[in-house]
Length: 615
Ligand SMILES: Cc1cc2nc3c(=O)[nH]c(=O)nc-3n(C[C@H](O)[C@H](O)[C@H](O)COP(=O)(O)OP(=O)(O)OC[C@H]3O[C@@H](n4cnc5c(N)ncnc54)[C@H](O)[C@@H]3O)c2cc1C
Ligand code: MET
Ligand SMILES: [Zn+2]
Image: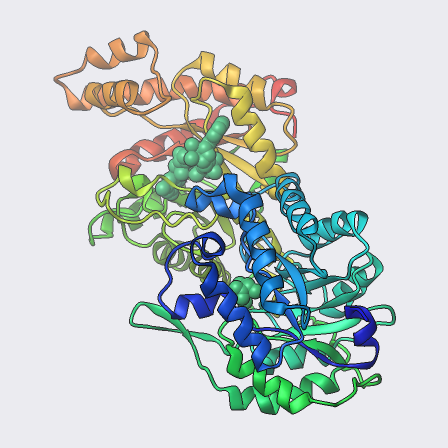
């Protein structure tokens, strides 16, 4: 007797959801905490599943690791919560059902910055607690990330000979988030020594069976499936699942036909669903042969989006390039904006850049204006894209829209937080930071969405990233830049620099980076403007000389603007000795200033070329 021995000749039925069942009862605390605070509740759920026909149950430990328990301040209780869970499940099983120690995946559906080392640490701790209490097997479930599952499976396999079940979760039929076909992933888990391999959560029976049609029956492992009851719906502020056990009854034989030998339920399932599986498959032997549907090769489709205009990082390798930030207006009159776009194009700017609600204050949508500017004047536009205002659904939709409009230049930024802007109470989404956004965009360039879905064609985005040289520790800024390069950044655009000394330090810090930099220069418009930047904008310091030059024209706005231009010109003189890329920032829609500076920058003869940033 033993779980694996039984599976050689039988189909076993596993239990269904624990978490969503508790949630449906109105539980709103940490579910694992109930192992200690309300043990009778957990035990009665186990018993209900056993009564429904489950031969295999799992401990209430899905999130009982320090990383997830941290959310509730329970990270010190990993041992107690796991121990209690095992003893409750064992008591309920009373020797009539196998008890699996459950460990849930940590990396979710979006990009995660949690290191594998930290995940492994947390996994080891929970693993030892479960093994110490004596379970009949381990259930590694709800892993969206194959790298994570492989890493923890290796650890578990090296620590125990007990049966191990490894279950992947999918967002798309047949394919993991990283594009690995599910059949390949299952084979890899089998090779790493998993005794049972399969799928759980996220998909309901329909999509899970469709996925299993692409999966071969493993030679040295058994197949498992724990489908969700349905897709969730959101009613009256609560997630609900359609609870039709009759539907599960009809699906049972379809799972069997796919070679599944351990069949249970995940989110939204109840003892009624498990009973449906158990009665329907009672006495039936496992299927050992089936036809496997081959995954179709992705079809290469000719791209429909227009091809990019000039490649800015390429230009920077060859010659000087000036780009100019011309921000969307805060009000609805766009006259000055389009005049500016036209004038800058005529002045020779290689592109204009349009901020995305910078300083977290609403402006006209930069994509609309970029598209119109491109259509009206042929201007190449760099669209800033901030992670603050869009979740990963909105970001992806936006990327597809940019591609469709033929806007291929993006500046990927995390974005100023909402609290600095006009609506400090608004939420800052930040599902991802600039680094993960850059990765996402580069994945789109491979024709693949964040969930691994085939986009049907490849995008052609060139991705810029932000660099702030106005920080105390430039070396840390460079380290962050290196991460952005690793993620796929093609070039950098910097915050404005206001002193020649800073330009030299900046150049020294980035000269060996493998991608080019556009160095920021923003003309000062008045003495007050200079003081504001110096005193109020974090990281920006103007030299005493610059501030006193501006202060001289305190009462003469025209003369002050002229002085601001003169200062910018000397900064451009210094900058063009060090960098090929000049990024001019138009202050307060005064594009005449940046038009003049664009012409000025192009008219400076190339100087000591050897010192130019090495790219
Ligand atoms: C060229 C340019 C254009 C911009 N356009 C916009 C815009 O359109 N809309 C908008 O809202 N904002 C814009 N910003 C502002 C920008 O979003 C913020 O300045 C941001 O904090 C830094 O850039 P990032 O978004 O790439 O953040 P990231 O570099 O991704 O930084 C994200 C987080 O990491 C932290 N961090 C950054 N650098 C370091 C470091 N060296 N060490 C440790 N932690 C660090 C930051 O505090 C921040 O919380 C722009 C900035 C630049 C330089
Ligand atoms: C989020 S997937 C399901 C986790 C666990 N098996 C439960 O039912 O609570
Ligand atoms: Zn689930």
